[in-house]
Every structure is written in structure tokens, then in C-alpha cells.
Image 1 (cartoon, rainbow, N blue to C red):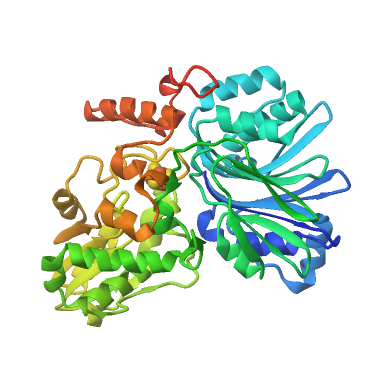
Image 2: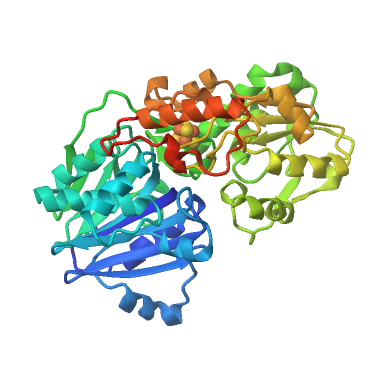
Length: 501
Ligand code: SF4
């Protein structure tokens, strides 16, 4: 599931809740449907979960939160769902952190990602735990880890069992019933996870994005390696490379859309990379760049690339669309039925800026095309004479199985259309995608170290590739996809060791 995770431990016996609270609030862009906190004190887990955004806390009730969530170790999660059901009851029961216990062993986990081979794992968990109930993938990962702890009594072996047997993406932070605080990443390192600390308060933390370390005034220490487990003691972090996998696959979409611009990956700010994306598109599309009067962005993920387009082309960047400050949902991570009405209410166009003008809009990506279409309709009504869309993320041709909610071929406007055909669907005069080569160059990682499955069709994990191949064939033959591809039992692998059938 698309999520943000944060966890912290304090070695001066201070309450950890404020750190986890700000850690999650700074990452609410990674999931707005629900949020959850879990703290550990005296061998007990204390949990609070609710729907929607992380709430504001008024000073007069802060003591209630400290009472509700005591202790100096805590983890939290903000979520938008890419597995399980989406009604309110299912959302709240699928909210993380999750806990599991058996034979006196307890575990709490918060994770970001998505498991691909869920069917055999559900069977394995049902055989091993009488009370196993699947609401979403976090139940699988938590129980698989618990099973490993029961069998081996060793955190490293349990994490290895998860890494070796789950096909998918998972960045995890957790607490055992003994108060051990840890984090690990799948062997491909698909989702981000970093570690940092505050020397003044002796607090150590794990976070999906660096912005949450910044907001807590922590120093960033490192990004976890793929296949790495990190434990924490009062002396600091202990890094254990559990699995060596030469193939890494960090999600390229984090750079274009998902992450906050003020987070860093590999030492580079995301906003700097997005500016480069904008410069690249101007170089790739000189004809369209010359055929425009102004640039505008759809706030906010298009803002940084608009700066790059402006710098490279010399065109005026007009703030011709304004965003309602208190409609905070991100259009892409909204559910289908929420999307149309919210984008319409969220973005307003300043008619006098665009009337009679040839306009370039910068977009981070085009997934379904519906939000871009709404903006273009508004621009046309306001009198724009031409509209070109400069898109920083190359054409999305296939679903994501790793925690971004684009899970069928049919929902993707680019799955079987050329850019010219997409332009027609959304009402643009041209759709100009950044090339994959330039995307990779701007990101600054090797192509082989990135996941770009949704734009290349090459999935880093074996089960995902097998499913994608089957489903693509069916889609091209006219099969109607009614659910997420990876939730179809018939394309799932048979065994829990991650081998495709
Ligand atoms: S398939 Fe696309 S969105 Fe999903 S992890 Fe890979 S790059 Fe990211």
C-alpha cells in the first residue's frame, strides 16, 4: 500500500509520541485515508488508529494523547490502500501499525509497499495461526515475521524469512514484545527508508522520507540498503546486510510524483531533480517549446519542473492556477469516485492569465488522464488557444504491483495509446513525455538500480513479471479487469516461497 512510515526510540525515557506525530504529519502526502500510532511501554503495545489525515492536536488535549500513547518507543503509519477493501470499516481495520502474537511472542509492524504473492502466503498463515484474518498485506508481513520469530527466536532469521519469501515491495519498521526496535527493506529496495538521530535527546528514528527527520530536527544518517536490517541500541544503529541482491530497484515514480520535493534521496533534493526533468523536456521538444507564450503548473507536484521549463525555455512562468489551501487530498491517491469532484473544487484557473495564450502545463505524470483533462477543459473555457502538456514521468504503460494505486491495464490511459492518442483523449494539442534516458540521467542512479516497471514493462520481482505478462495478454485480448491484477487468485503463484506457478 502507498504509505508513509515513521518510528523512533528515545534513550532518555522521554515520551516518543511527539516525534512520531510530526514524523507522520510531515508525510501525510504519502497516505491520507487513515493514520495510526503505536507505542511500547512495560511490555505493552498502545494503539490509536483513525481515518483521514493525521489530526491537529490542540494544546488543551495534548495530555490525553500522552496518556493514550505512553512510552519511549513508537511507530506510525499514514496509508492509502492498494490492497484489501476501501469501505470505512475495512479501511480502519486495515490501518497500521498492526500487531500479532502467538505463544507469548508479540510483534508490531508498520510497512510501506505491497505484497504480490499474497494467495500462498495467506494459506501459509491460515495453517500456522488459528486466528489469522487477512484485511490487508500488513497482516501477512506481520504474521510471516512472527512465524520466523517463533521458529528461530532470532530477528535476523525472521527478517531473512520475510525477505526470501515475499515477492513485492516492503520497507518496514517494527517493535518486538521485548522492546527491540528495528527496520528493514526488501531485497530490491523498492520503497524509501532512511535512518537518523538527534544527539541532544538520544533519539533514533526510521522514516520513509528525510523530510520527517528534518521536521523533528534529526540528523540524517543513511538510507537503508536493499536487503538490510537495522537494529538500534543506546550506542546507535547496527546495520546487518541480511540478503545481498545485485539487482536493486528503487521506485522511479518517487522522484516524479510521490515524494515531497524537500526530501532527499541519494543526497539530492527531489525538487532539484524535478527541475532537471523540466529542463530535459524543453530540450527534447523544441518545437512545442517555441510554440507557447507561457508556462503554468498544476500545483504542487508540477511546480518544480515548471521552474526547469522556465529556466531552459525563457518563457514566463505564470501562476495561472491556484490551489484551494484546505482541500488537501492529492488527486492521484484519491479513490476513483472521489477524484473528479475534488480536482474540480481544488484547482481554479486565473482566466486573465491564459485568455488568448498558448500554454504549456507541466504535469508530474498522466495515470488515468482524468485530472489533466479537467484542467485542460478549464483552460479552454478560460480562452487558452493552445495547450501542451509537458509530463516529467514517461508514459505509464503497465500497472504497479508495489504500492502505487494503478493496478490494472485498463485504467491507464497510456497502456495502449500513443502520446498523440492520449492528447486527443485529454483535449491537449500535444503531450510531451520526458524520455526514460533523461529521467534516469536526472535521477542520477544507474538504470539497473531503478524500478521503472510501469513505464518499461520490466518488473524487478519474478511473480510480478509473471502476473504482468499474463494480464497484459488478457487485456490485449479484451479481458475486462474488475479488480487489482495482484488480487486475482488465478494469476497468483502456488507456493509461498515466491516461485511463480
Ligand atoms: S512500477 Fe512504477 S510506481 Fe511501481 S514501484 Fe515501479 S516505478 Fe514505482
